[in-house]
Length: 310
Ligand SMILES: Cc1cc2nc3c(=O)[nH]c(=O)nc-3n(C[C@H](O)[C@H](O)[C@H](O)COP(=O)(O)O)c2cc1C
Ligand SMILES: Nc1ncnc2c1ncn2[C@@H]1O[C@H](COP(=O)(O)OP(=O)(O)O)[C@@H](O)[C@H]1O
Image (cartoon, rainbow, N blue to C red; front, side):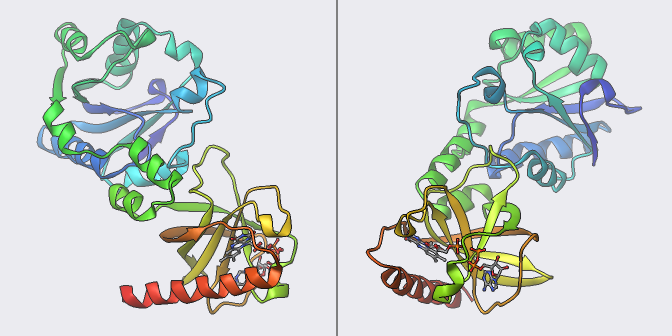
C-alpha cells in the first residue's frame, strides 16, 4: 500500500475507485465497505484508493471538542493496509480545506487529484463547504467529470448496526467485549513505559506505567482489565489498572500494568496492550494492604478468565 499526505501528491497511471471517510476504528462495518472497494478495483481494473482525513474534522472545526479516537493515525493506516488496499491518501484536514466548495473539492481532489472513475459511498454522505452537497449532487458531478457513483444503500448500512460512536460509548462504559466484537480485533493502547512512584514493587505488584504518545486516543473507563501484550516476541498477560489511584492520593490518570509471571525491567520500552476483559471499576481503599488484597483477587480472576479461554 502506498501512502500520501495529500491528494496532490497522489500518483498513478490508471484511473481509480475511491472511497472516502474517517474510518475511525476500521471496524467490521468499515471492513465490509473496504472489501467492496478492493474487489471493485480488481474486477474493473482500477486502482483502489481510500481518501481519509487527519486531524479529525471535529478536532479542527470544534477546537474545544474533547473528541477521542479509537485509532491513532498510525494504527488507522496499519488496519487499512490489511484490507489489501493499494493507495491510502491521508489528506490534511484544515480550515481552508473545509471551505472548499463542493465543485472545487470534486474537481481538484477527486477528479484531478485521485483520477476517480468510480466512487463508492454511503447514501447519507455529505461534502463540501458546510457539508451542503449530497450523493445526488455527486452523481451530477459524475456526469460532468466522467465518474460513476456506487451508492451503499440505507439498508446495507443499517444491516451493519456498528458505528465508531457505539464503540467509543462501549469503551467509555468499560464494555470491552462489545467494543472488541464490533471492532473485529482487540482494542489496544501503545506507549512507552515510564517511571512511576515505585510503590508497586513495595506491595509485590510492580506496574509498568504506559505513557501514550497521542493525546487524542480514547482510554477506556477507569477500572481494572485483563490484557495481553507481546514482549520480546512472547505473549505475556497482565492486569491493567486505569485511573487516578485514589488510594495513594493520586491525581493524574495513569495506565499501569502488572504482567503475570514476569520480572524484567521495561523502562523506556514501547509496549502495546490489548484489552481482553473488564474485571471491576476503580475503588478507593482505606489502606494499601486492602488495595494489595484486592489486586490479589484481580490476579486470580484474570487467571481464571485466561484458563477458561484456552
Ligand atoms: C490490578 C491493579 C488494580 C488496581 N486497582 C486500584 C484501585 O482500585 N484503586 C486505586 O487507588 N489504585 C489501584 N491500583 C493502582 C495502585 O494504586 C498503583 O499500582 C500503585 O500506586 C503503584 O504505583 P506506581 O506504579 O507509581 O508505583 C491498582 C493497580 C493494579 C496493578
Ligand atoms: N511483572 C512486572 N510487571 C510490570 N512491571 C515489571 C514487572 N516486573 C518488573 N517490572 C519492572 O518494574 C517497573 C515497575 O515497578 P514499580 O515499583 O511499579 O515502579 P514504577 O512506579 O516506576 O512503575 C516496570 O516499569 C518494569 O520496568
